[in-house]
Every structure is written in C-alpha cells, then in structure tokens.
Image 1 (cartoon, rainbow, N blue to C red):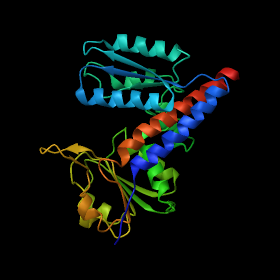
Image 2: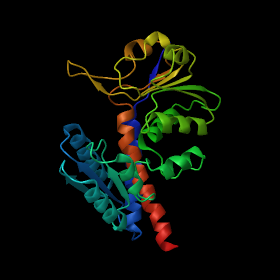
Image 3: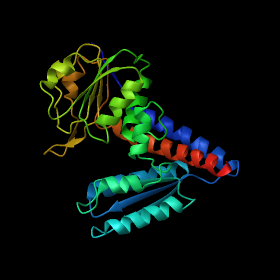
Image 4: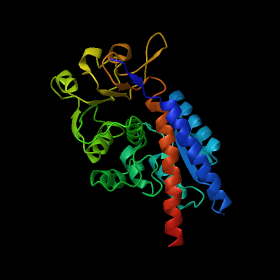
Length: 288
C-alpha cells in the first residue's frame, strides 16, 4: 500500500502564518498583542530548549513573551506567588509552567493555581472537564495538534476504531476525549492493558504515546490505518526515533507522521493558537 506522510512542519507553518495575520489585524484594530509567560524551574537542558523554542515562536507571530527562569531551590510558595502575579498581569494572556517540576513542588497544585482563562497548556481540571463534557475551551496542546493532523487527511473520523497507546494526563487521556468528541470508538491502552498488539491490530487510527522506541511493530498496523506517532526518543546513536517502527508501519498505513517533523511542531502551533484564543476570551471578559 502506498502511504502518505502527514507533514506536521508544513501544517504548523500554515497555522503560524494564519496566527500572525490575526495578530497583525488585532494590533491594527487597537488591541494589545497576545502575551505568553513561560516559567521554568530548575536546570533541565531539554526543558530549556523547549522554553527557548516556545519564546522564539511567540516572537515570530508577534506575541509578547515573558520567560521566567527560577532556581531548583524555588519553593512551592514562591512559585504560587509568581503564578498569582501573572494571573493578575493584564499583559499576560497565557501562562505555561514547563513540566516536569522539581520533586518538592506539587505539580497538581501549580496547575490548579493558573487562571482557567490563561491555562494555555489546557491542563487545568476545569479545561479537561470541559473537554470531557464536549464543551472545550482551552484544549491540551499536543492532543489538539493531533486532531489537526487527523483533520488534514480529510478522512471522516466518525465511526472509526481508534486505539490510543499511553494514558498520561498530557497526551493519552485528553486525546482519548478528543477522539470521543470526534465520534470515534476509542480504546485507551495503559500499563495494565493485556495484549496491546491485539487492540492495535483492529485500529483504524493508532495514536502511539508510550515513550518506547519502536514499540508499535509494522505488522500490527492494519492496511489503511492512520498512524500518529507522538513518541520522540533519543537512541544511543543520537538519532531520534518514534514509538512506531516507521519503515515497517508505512508499508501498511494510509497516512503516517514522521519523527521528527510530525506531532512536535503541532504542539507549539497549538500553544500559539491557545494563547491567541485566550487573549480573545479575556477581551470579551473585560469588555463585558
């Protein structure tokens, strides 16, 4: 079967171009540019790269960005004080606290402290709850990006059998809710799932988010399935690999995302979308 690659870089570029046009129009109409605050606690080289990429993306589309880098010894109380200050800052429309946090800080309390209209990561229980009730406001970035990739194929999703491998709060659970909202029949596989292969083999849509390179074998993919590979794993050789055996899976898939260049660019594009949406929501709140 001839497969088609879902080009996340291209789709993300188109989204960012559209966002920049909307920001330019917003500024021309006299409204302030959207503002995003990114908070990093501790010394984590990978997190520092992610934060830098997010701030650069903000500047490209005309956002105001504020980066707050705190020491590893920052207390939970100090971080909560900063979040409260950002909640009250009218120039900041979105707040992103880069995860993971040091072990002495309770991630749940930090996420819950963020104003629900500034929760551009879409992790607050309020926003996850809205998604579960099919009334989404700010949606989790990676799952939102995944749905944009699926929609780009122009394949009707309703009625499709979707299998999600991984049940994290960041990807697996919210993307399962997204797929339910798209009228898919959804199976979410997790660490206690028996015979994951059996579930994957019947899937029309496979979302792999397990963090194990090559976990999904090519012959697990049924002919014509759509494969979205969320994994980005660094091998001993330094090469990046996804959770799916790309070469083997592409022989059966109708559509498949590469790693890198698939889901990754969409996560940042979705963050920018959410920040613009948050600014618009806050405009309406202030204007009454």
